Amino acid sequence: MQEGATYGNASTAESPVERVMRVFGSARATAIAGLTTGALIKWNRALSKGGGGGLVPAKYQGRYLRAAQEEGLPLTAEDFIAEPRP
Image (cartoon, rainbow, N blue to C red):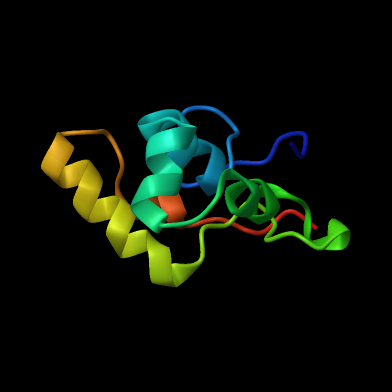
C-alpha cells in the first residue's frame, strides 16, 4: 500500500477492495460479486501492474452496500471513494 495513502472513511490506509474483503471476508466478498478471489486480487493490484488500483468497480459497489446494510456491517459509500494506486 502506498505510504500515507488514505481511502474513504477507513481509519487505516486500506484500499476499498481491502476494506470490502475485511468487512465480508474474502469468500463472502467474492460470492456477493459473483466472481473469483482472483478478480478481487486483480482489483487490488496497482494500475501499473494491470490491476484496478485498489478500487471496487462501480457496478459492484451497490451489491456490497446492500449486503452490508442487510447484514448490519460497517461499510458505507464513502468507503469506495479513493484515488487509485498507480
